Figure 1 (cartoon, rainbow, N blue to C red):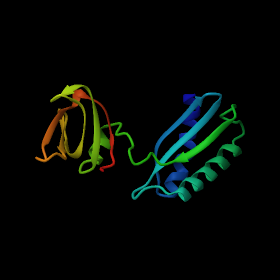
Figure 2 (tube, one colour):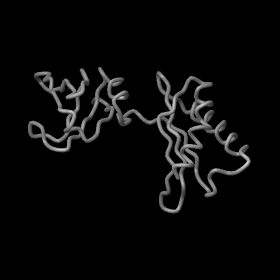
Figure 3 (cartoon, rainbow, N blue to C red):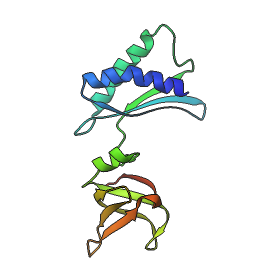
Figure 4 (cartoon, rainbow, N blue to C red):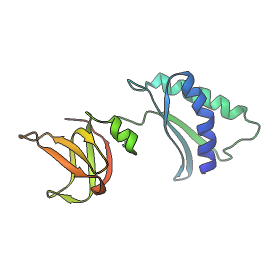
Amino acid sequence: MSNVVETVKELVEPILESHSFYLFDVEFVKENKSYYLRVYIDKPGGITIDDCVLVSDELSEKIDALPEDPIPEAYFLEVSSPGAERPLRNEKELKEAINEYIHVSLFKKLNGEKAYEGTLLSVNDDDIKLQINDAKQTVLEVPRELIAKSRLAIKF
């Protein structure tokens, strides 16, 4: 299955570059009895439905034009945005989220809690700083080794 993902990445990158989009992720998964090829794309300011349709059409044409089908199973192609609450998967994405509202899940409790939401103020090798939206506008230092997952969050 990783061969499918790599092939699709190679096919979709030039399409995305030509429209000033970028690739967030590609996955090829089986859910119940169906296969899904999911391509997550983004651009500054966000992706529209028309952007997804454009990339889906162009990618489908490229896949169909290959001499040998890289995906022998029947599958559904889904092109979408990674979403408003997209995961922050690596150092680069975490640093790009500075001044954004995020959610962090922890491996173990910190100050009695295993999850926090707040504005990401800074990122370094040892910790991240979050401004928590409590009455005091507390700045919380979260050790990096405690962070299980992080993602953008919607502030209510």
